[in-house]
Image (cartoon, rainbow, N blue to C red; front, side):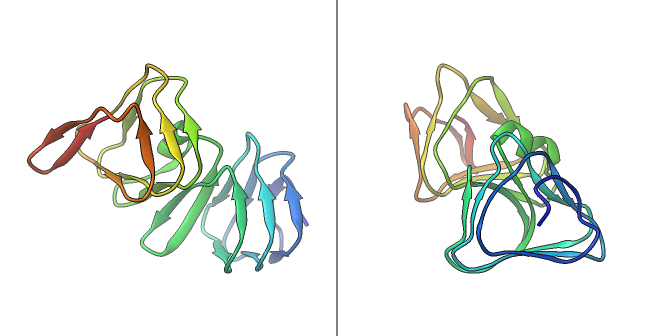
Length: 156
């Protein structure tokens, strides 16, 4: 199993894995995270550059920040900043683990941020969005101060 580098064949991870570098999944390869796998990405990422990333039930990825295009997983990232820099218009960044901001962030144009689990601790920083959405759906923001427009949340 690759813990860093570019996959050169299909891989199935079904045990505990700790990344030692970034993992890239190119076409035509598949990375399948089997049921009950535990993946610690640390400060690295798992990113599709054309290959597929599939997650079965009860997979634990830590930290759990992912970019998806519809139901397609595009990657797992160590921070919101890293996920934002890899997300494209029409994609959603899901924050499913607690995070503390270390810098001000801006949601990229056309990208949605969904805080769906854990707590986003603002740490005196802010997140803004000019042309994306910020959705709080099961997660929380501390402190919970929001600037809203008629169409939704503009910034946290």
